[in-house]
Length: 75
Image (cartoon, rainbow, N blue to C red):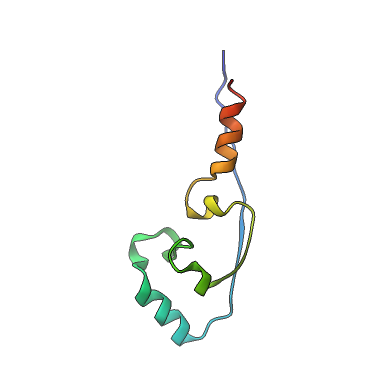
C-alpha cells in the first residue's frame, strides 16, 4: 500500500537589472495578465532572467524532475 507524500520544491530566480524600456518591451512581447507572477520564463525569459538555481520546470509550473522521482518511489 502506498501513502500519499507531500513535497515542495524551491527554485530561486534572479532577475536582470532592467530599464523601464526593457520592461515595457518584455511586457509587449508576452501576455502578462494570464501568468502567475506576470512573467513566463519559457516565453522570452532570457530577456529578464539572469539565473535560475533549481528546477527550471518548477518555475514554468511543475517540478518535473521531482515528480518523476516521487513516482519512481511507487514502483
